[in-house]
Amino acid sequence: MKKLIAKRLARTLPLIVLISIVTFALLHLAPGGPAGVYSGNTRMSESDLARIRANLGVDRPLAVQYFLWFKKVFLGLDFGTSYVTGQPVALMIRDRLPATLELMGTAFILAVLLGLSTGVVSALRRDGLLDQIISVISAGGLSVPVFWLGIIAIYIFSLKLGVLPSGGRETIGAQAGLADHARHLVLPASVLSIGFFASWSRYTRAQLLDAIRGDFVRTARAKGLSETAVIWKHALRNAALPILTVIVMQIPTLFTGAVITETVFSWPGMGRMFYEGLERHDYPRVLGVVVIFSFLIILFNLIGDLLYSAVDPRISLGGPAAVVAGRAEEQ
Amino acid sequence: MTRGIAHGVFTGFGAALASGRSARRRPPRHFFGNGTAVYSLMLIALILAVSLLAPLMTPYGRDAIDLGAILAGPSPAHALGTDDLGRDVFTRLIYAGRFSMLVALCSVAIALAVGLVTGTVAGYFGGAVDVAVTMTIDLFLSVPVFLVLLVAASAGGGRLWLVPLVIGGTSWMETARIVRSLVMSLKEESFVQAARAAGARDSSLIVRHVLPQAFPSVIVSATTGFAQAMLVESALSFLGFGVQPPVPTWGNMLENANVFIRQAPLAAFAPGFMIIITCLSFNNIGEGLRRMLALDR
Image (tube, rainbow over all chains, first blue to last red):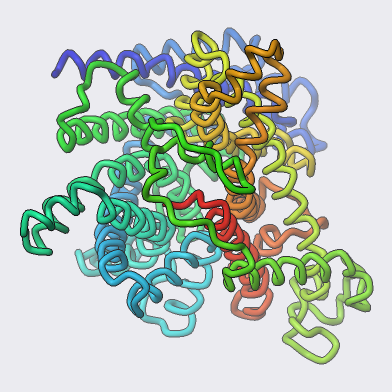
């Protein structure tokens, strides 16, 4: 098992390298660059600009720059120094990672709990009033832009009703208690979870309905099992696997949502750090976040695959082929 | 995977049966029997018509600035008020429909083209090509695509043509996957085998026999893909890396909305509302098509 996990992680390392190369190349394609901020300044001479570029190390050939960055990151876990704040990027990430995980984790749990439960209720009360209400809400959830929902939530709950804070992770200056913390978490986590809740609710409903129509459910009923046992032991058990697949597959999207949600709610996490870094041409910061996010996504995918084989004994962790093929068929 | 039997007018369903649920399929329903889908289609037609006829709908120019009416509330002159530069929100809203839909349309077209080609090639030829395509799909699905998309969009400096290119280039995977599995099962079908035995070449087999069968699934995935593309564009533009003003889209109209929402809430509500009803309509149409084509389970 340990060997297997190590093998999987080793295989994903090239993936992280590849995405870092693509990001690196794209960043350097951008006009202006990190010294571009100063180029409009008439009091700066060309030699001043050259000195700034030399200081930042962006005057060397791209391949050399990438190689130096690569060596530091993958041998020493040193992500360089931010062009803007002068802080080590690794330190900035360490400071912000907990906030991001807290937001994403809360949203994830919310979405799983609400999505699966409403999905099951919808399927069992098919075409009933409750099903229709849930369907309308989830259809809306799939069609609403996350950032807009955030803006509207702030407008209603913070500006108009004044019941929840509009942004940040805790009240500045006040004693940061748990309650204060939780109050700050409510809006961003709810907003971030909406899309996932909608998608998982619909998917659960469809999968469960499909399972209920299956032959094994007819057999179970014919055996004289109670309806509860039929649903919980047979139908849900069979629907669980595809549902789990979809949940795992959407984990990268959770990171996407975090960038937008953190920006709207001024949440001091890595998503906002990424966005600000991109706006200010702070390459080390952008690259650092991309690498860490990629690593986390791959890690969560691995956990998903392990869960997968726990739920379905037919799936072995033999290799990526088995998992990939399994996923492709589920789709 | 069981293979399906082609039947009815839409012989293409056979393809959709790749998932092996032919026996439990609901009978095909008529698209126009689905009220929600029909209303959605009418709504889209209405939005499209108003956007295209924008100059007839409003007395103001798209970018006309009225410094005397900055962040004005709704009035007979400005039905939805004005934005922070004194531009008429209603005018920009209907012009934005053009660009939001155009960008989404182009994004979907690019995603479809890439997905169709890679999916067909992988499914039809199998072997090393298939492995390469499957790995690429997996790669795209396991990296934070949106972050790279943001980086790419910022590198492009917000050129209009770049936005659909970037969105399409990162959303072709679903189509590719659907087409791949369809083609894989289709190429074993007897009518394809018969055509092959009759001496048809690979290219004509694919174009004349395999791809038409994949059409129903692809069109459904394109419809919901349109809504997705519109949401991504709006997020990009909101963050300032998408379509740049003065060209209006529903997304970039919201760029400063959170700053001015106190003074001009309508300017913040309206574009979001348009995005929701448009995406909702496209999702409904996709659902209606899926039912009509009996692709649902």
